Image (cartoon, rainbow, N blue to C red; front, side):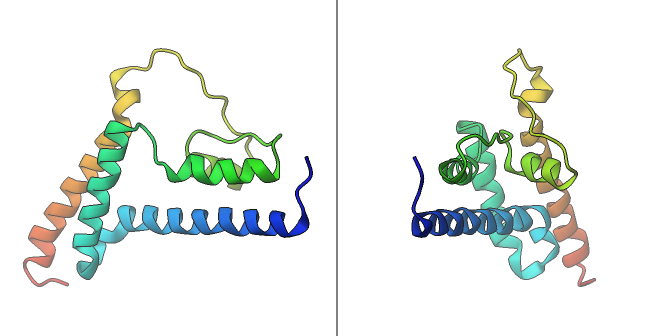
Length: 135
């Protein structure tokens, strides 16, 4: 089924909008703790991302964007992770094929440990650097 030109432009714009919002959220979670005025926004987003990973196991923006892009090209394959997909594309690698082997505890929960580590680093940074008026 071929999409009309206007529908293709709409889907492409919508997919790109979801990508930009997703990228902005990732950047706030990754480096928002470095900007004192964004610290509380960072904490809220970090908690939301942690809870989504805990209860859903994925970020809902990833399947939303990839689903929209699949409407444009149903033959294209995507990674299960948005970050992994775009990093692999940036370096010219093909998407990974998702396997459902029994993951170890660390493989299954590694993202949660990264988020908890980020929370600890940001808290220590806030306490010792920002709290002492070094910024």
